[in-house]
Image (cartoon, rainbow, N blue to C red; front, side, top):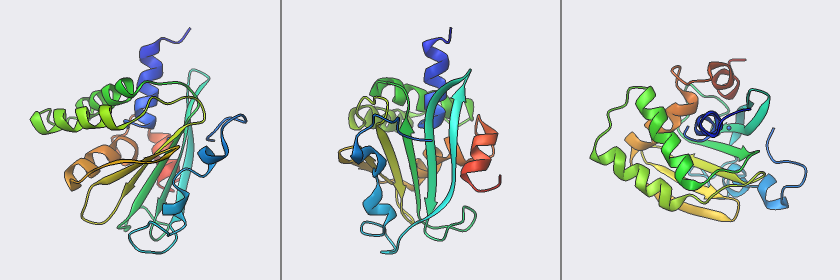
Length: 188
């Protein structure tokens, strides 16, 4: 049987690092982040284009589905990104934040007062998620990330350093699940 820690790590990679909703998910979950993707709330004012998608499974358990969008349909030279994670399991906000911190430590990011503040902010901003819920991270040029959940905007962390570090969990060549990363960035 899979331990909660293994599932949490997998989720973290999904988020703390992303198909998506289960058949019984709400109608909004399938459109989570759609106003940004369609261009209504995109920094460019244009619709974002899908770069890639992946499904994370750990020991046969589906953890989440992820989709990556950008302003030009490419990962390498895009200015605006949207990472959509739709969960297939239940996780508390504190577990998601903890896994984000664990991934940063694994990737060698310095743990300092600033990173601890970011983790605390994430823990208070994010909701607990259930199967079918989503969290969207929207990065605009030279700024931080605006987070959206199943019911709308969750909050903003305005730091390009945070944005780069957070998205690295899924998009860096050092991502834990390299195959999933490659699918997201359109390499596979």
